[in-house]
Length: 139
Image (cartoon, rainbow, N blue to C red; front, side):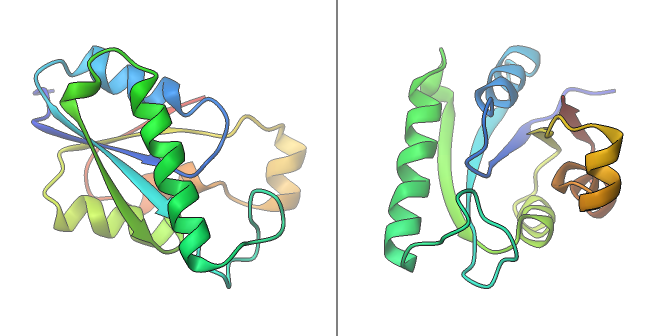
């Protein structure tokens, strides 16, 4: 496999997402890395805390989390941040395709087989199915 030139790391405000960014920076040292800060729409069935704030507050919080994530890693100067609103399973594959990215690195959610069976597919599995470029899922 040829090393990618452009790597996308989507963030959804979940724990341990810095691992995906660190992985991308370490494993693809010559690639341009973009953090896609996904703002959950108001009509999303689930959110981090169960209650979503107004659009401008959610957007600001998402940008702040992404900036803190980037500041937490070495080589932050190699990373740019972009914000997009939408359901992650739709917005990330579209952004990866339209943005010309070669690879996506995402942090999967750790869950038991029972939780996966009850709650259904996770976002990471959806991204793997819908994204036309290779996706690395860290668990």
